[in-house]
Amino acid sequence: MGRAYQNRKDSIAKTSDKKAKVYSKYGREIYVCAKSGDPDPDLNATLKALIDRARRDQVPTHVIDRALDKAKGGGGEDFASARYEGYGPNGSMVIVECLTDNPTRTFNEVRTAFNKAHAKLGNAGSVAHMFDHCAIFVFAAESDDVVLEALLMADVDVMDVEHDDGKATVFVKDTEYGKAKKAMAEAFGEVEFEVDEIQFVPQNTTALSGDDAEQFTKLVDALEDLDDVQKVWHSAEV
Image (cartoon, rainbow, N blue to C red; front, side, top):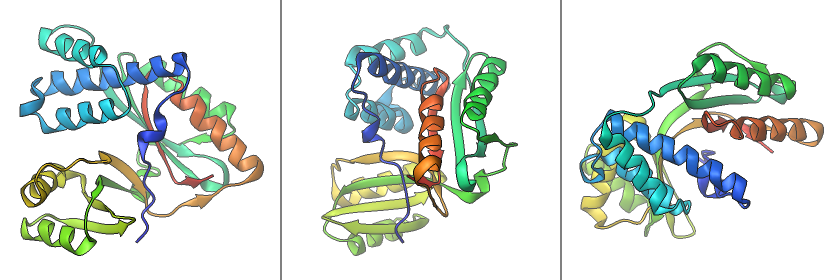
């Protein structure tokens, strides 16, 4: 079906300043995930997947360990999740996920980023209904039929399975994440995932070019540069 998902391998920064921001975002997300659940990755599948993704994005071990140690300590910052939705050029849709210890500051910073890019910040739920909240896995596989059969045998609610260039891309509902991952491990043994995360996948995409593409790029860059912003999902094809 050609679903448009965002492979976050391209988030690896090339400058020391941008690397520091990437490390900080991962550190904060690992801390919150470990503090809200079990801080042992072997007992917390979501935390383990997050740490694996951080390692793929070349986050240093000491950053990961420091976040885990802080979570085990029981104190530290009190972060809350915040989600903002809005519109970019030509009706493109944007979802911004944040972890913040000051919701008022975060809202004002996100709103400023939208305003400077001549974009419009919407109300909660204004665009989320146009995205599917999916768990996505990409890994080497012989065919989509083999993968689909393994998932169906495990009674996983599969949204889609694609196969291209020796790799399978699996889409399941976000609530099926753990069940799907367990099914693939039981069917194929130790699987090395190229992508293993939960994303907002747009049901339709919007092609942007020229000035619209430039304005949209400025919007995304401004949002991702904010310390409280963890992820930016969108429907644009630039």
